[in-house]
Amino acid sequence: MKAKQLFYTLALGVFLFSACNPASDKKVNEWAIALHGGAGAMSPENYTPEQIQQYEAELTAAIELGAEILKQGGTSLDAVEQVVRYLEDCPLFNAGRGAVFTNDGKNELDAAIMNGADLQAGAVAGVGDIKNPITAARMVMEKSEHVLMVGKGASLFASQNGAEVIDSSYFYTERSYRALQRALERDKKMGTVGCVALDKHGNLAAATSTGGMTNKRYGRVGDVPIIGAGTYANNNTCAVSATGHGEYFIRYTVAHDISALMEYKGLSLAKAADEVIHKKLEEVDGRGGIISVDKWGNVHLSFNTSGMFRAFATSGGDRGVNIFN
Ligand code: ASP
Image (cartoon, rainbow, N blue to C red; front, side):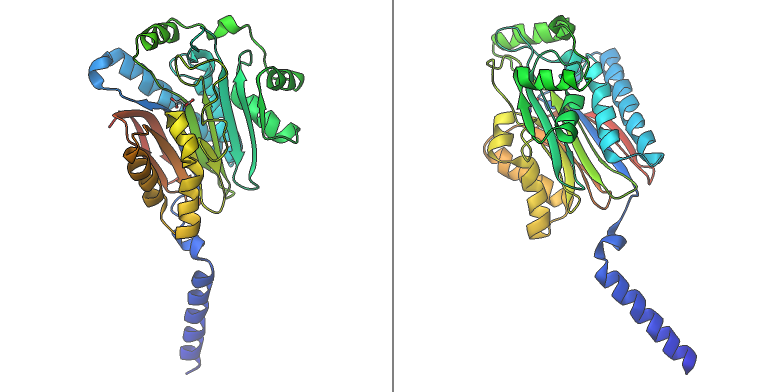
């Protein structure tokens, strides 16, 4: 009899514990990370096999860099910053070194980072002489009382805090220059980099960095540095980094909308993201995509273009590197 009573007491204890801690039994990965290198109308015919290999190699190196940080118990904030720095230094992507040109042949870069643990965020917009805008964004978050700084003020603040300043000729790549020439003839090109991560401590973070849209008017700011539009992280829900036609992502507050659908409607990450990317945005022809990780370590990548440079890795051993749909 006593053994039976003990059994029932234990069973009730287990039931009450899991009922009170619904998050604990939904956890699918101790850590998880995803990145993107821009979305757009891309098809395999437009790339040589060597180019595809090159992109895949860079995406793989970047995701492995972030995965290693998380595996070692590092923070999601460090992981997303380091991954985005890596992609900013790679001329293949439209961020940092490979940033596209404005209509008047200059480079104006935007970046943002957000910490899901305390909703702290930092962003810079329209900077033209900072080598790694994502690090400048983190400085705004950690070393100022502000969230968003622009232009010369942002550059001065970042350089005073030790960010590497470069001559704007650093951003000149043949590829971006040709993209501007094509865009001037009406073939708009998109591309951006971003990373989201959940660390072993249960914290989410998101980071995004871009040169913006080729041929944009000078002074134009896109969705990337707008918290809730192109970048968002909240430990209660998910971390999101977006890429695509920024004006739509601002108007539809895409990243926050996904989080809000999870928080207020109880949708899963996949349902929430697909609702926004495939229903809300597609209806108005807003093109682009997002990468996301939720607080349980689920990864979801969603885009309504024909391609998105992307990669992910989880503690469970899942890995993926893809370009086309
Ligand atoms: N979303 C970026 C912007 O509008 C561009 C991109 O992701 O391709 O500035």
